[in-house]
Amino acid sequence: MANEDLWILGINMTKFGKHPDKDVVDLAAEAAMAALADAGVTMADMGVLAAGNLMGAAAGVGQQLQKQIGQTGIPVFNVANACATGATAIRTVIMAIKAGECEMGLAVGVEKLSGAGMLGAGMGVAASDEWTPTGRFGAVSTLEGKTGTDMMPGVFAQVGMEYGHKYGGTSFELFARISEKNHRNSTLNPLAAIQKDMSLEQIMNEPMIAYPNTRAMCSANSDGAAAAVIVSGEKLRTLSAEQRKRAVKISASVLTSDPYEEGCQILPNVNTLTRMAAKQAYELAGIGPEDLDLVELHDCFATAELVHYDNLMLCPEGGAVDFFNSGATWRDGSTPVNVSGGLESKGHPIAATGIANIWEICHHLRGEAGPRQIEGAKVGLAHVIGLGSACGVHILEKSGL
Amino acid sequence: MSNQIPLVEYLVLGDEPHLVANECTACGARYFDRRNACASCFGDSFAKVDIATEGEVRAFTIVTPWMPGTAPYVPAVVDCGGTSVRGNVVNTTPDAEHVTLGMKVRLTTVPFGADTAGTEAIGYGFEPIN
Image (cartoon, rainbow over the protein chains, first blue to last red):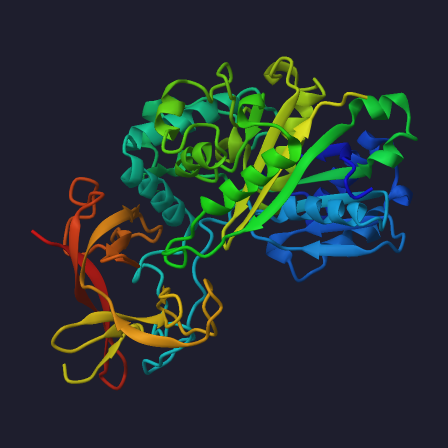
C-alpha cells in the first residue's frame, strides 16, 4: 500500500469573501459536508480527520466540527502550519492512509479573516517604564518598523525585490501586470472574494501597502473553508464507476521546511524550500513542469508569484521575468497560472487556501470548471507556502479509471 | 546623553557603533539572536564577531503605515561584507527614486526616545553613502 497512489474522492470550497452570518464551524461544516457528498460517502467512512484553523489553532476546530457533522471516535489531528495549514491537513490524511492506519480520511481548512488587516507583526514586548532588554534579541522595545519589518506585505515585497536585484528586469509595472492577469482571471470565478477586472493603471494607482505591492497586489483577507476526502487506491477500486471516474489521482504530495542558508533568518527564504518541494514532486510523479496544464501557486502578493515561476521550475533559473512577459502564464498561455484569480482576488482564508488550490486543479481535471475550464486539462500542480516556513506541493492527474 | 542603551543587544554603541553577531565556531554561520545551537551544523559553540558597517542593499520595500500621521519606512536587507543584515534605510527620502537596489549604505544610529530614568534607547539604520 505504501507505494500505491492515493486519490481525491471528493472536494469542495465555499465561496471566499465575507460571511458575517457564519462562524468558523459553520464554514468548515459547509465545506466538509459538501466534500463528503461530492465523494458519495459519509462521516462513517472516514478513518481520520485533519483540520486546520490557524487563527484559532488552540481551539481544536476538528472536534468542534465533529460535534456538528458527526462524532465517530476517529483520530483527529488539529494542524497549524501558517499559510500551508490546509496542505498540511491534506498531507496528514495522506500519511495516515499510506501508513495503513485507514483507507479514507477527511482534510478541512477554515478561516475567518475579513477585516483582519495586515498580518505578521512581531510579538510585542511588555510595556515598561524603564528600557529592559527582553527576548532573543535583547530588545528594549518592539522592533517592527525599527529594524525592518515582519509584516507580510513588506516581507514578500522584499522577496520580489531580491529576485530583481539578482536577475534584473523587474519593475513596479511588471509586478502590477501579474496582478492584472489574476484579477482578469477572477472574473470567471464565482467563488472568488473579489471578481473585478482591474486595469494596469487602476492597480498601480491603488494605495501603496509595501512598495512595489499596492492593495490590489496583496491577497485579500477573507472568510472561507475547503475540504477534501482522500481514499486509498485499493478502496477506490471497490467504489462505483461514477466515483472512480471523478476521482483525481494524487501523483505527488510533498511538504518541506526551509533549510539553513546564509541570510534565511534575516529575510525568510521562500525559494529553496519551494524548489526542493517541486523537485521532489516532479520526481515522485514522473512528470516535468512542461507537462503541467495549469498551476495554482501561492500569490499572497504579486511579488511572490514571480519568484515561484522560477522556484517551481516553470521557467529556466533566473528567467521568470521573460517567462511572464512571453504571456506563458495567462489563461491562453503555455502554463496558465492562477486561473482561479489567485489569492490576490480569490482571497486567502489562510487554512483553507492549501485545499482550495487543490480544489481548483481538480475542478479542471474533472472538466467541471465551466467558463474558466482549461480545455483538456490532464495534470496540474498546486503550491502553497507559509512563512516560517512550510511549503506544500501537490501534483494531480485526471482519472484514467 | 550619557545614559544610553542599545535597542537590541547585537548593536554596540560607542565611538564606532557596529553590529556584532554570534558566529558558529564550527561552520561560521552568523546569527544576531541568542542561540541554543547552530541551524546549519548543529554545533553549540559561538564566538562574537564584528559585522562590517558598510554594505549594499540587496532588497528593500517601502511600508506605508496604516496609522495616519506615521511616516513611511524602508525595511531592507543589506549585504555587509557577505553577512545579511536587516534594518531600515534612513536619512533619505523614502521613495523608489532615492532608494535603489544595489545602493551603497553605511550603518548609522537612530534614537528611539528615553525612558523614565532618562536612558535613551539607540537603534540603528543604514544611510546612503554619497
